[in-house]
Image 1 (cartoon, rainbow, N blue to C red):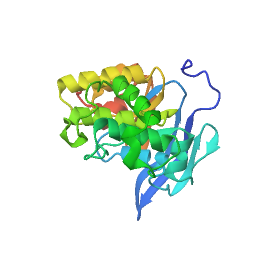
Image 2 (image 1 turned 90 degrees about the vertical axis):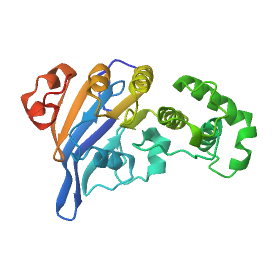
Image 3 (image 1 turned 135 degrees about the vertical axis):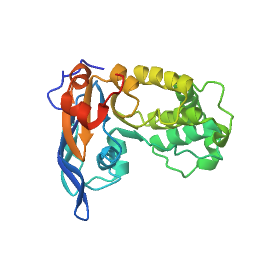
Image 4 (image 1 turned 30 degrees about the vertical axis):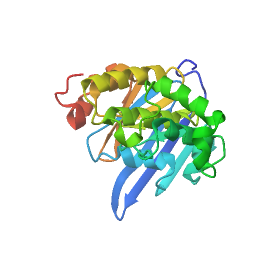
Length: 256
């Protein structure tokens, strides 16, 4: 990846984004830029609007007003699948895999969809070398080597998060949108995930929502803070660490 800040045009630009439910604003005048090559963390208390903002970026939710640009193109009204085709890849707070499929079968299916074949030949997916070999490489990349033939429903929680990442990576996204990848992980699993994210940031631009402040401050080039649906700060970790308004709104006495 190039040096952060090297691009004139940000890879992702969110401009004056509002999302209202009835008369209640959930995101309010949010403007945010993600520069190619950075891992940008989005933090804030529960209910701050982080996941709602992410859903608007991916196309899961339509904003009430505002603009979303990806690589200079206005994608505000594009459906989710067209955003994925342009290079947006998202993992969710809850793993979204096919529990009855094997680990390799899940990733092979994701590879097949990424190759443009959709689900038409899903019954043959485990027999197709064109999807099986890339699937195995992705499993090796995320640390699931040797778990290929395990049924996904039998995986531990941490392994499910790794499997979901492998499936997202199958589409070779330019921007990874990761929604709390460390949620529910134990100490050893969290350490493994942080190491994987450190490797992924070498090849991908990443927007990370995460409550684990150790992970955020060790991984992020920049951090944005949402509180009450509004963006109250965007800065380098060392600046956020000492920001009185951020501490009042969110960090408190967290050890960071």
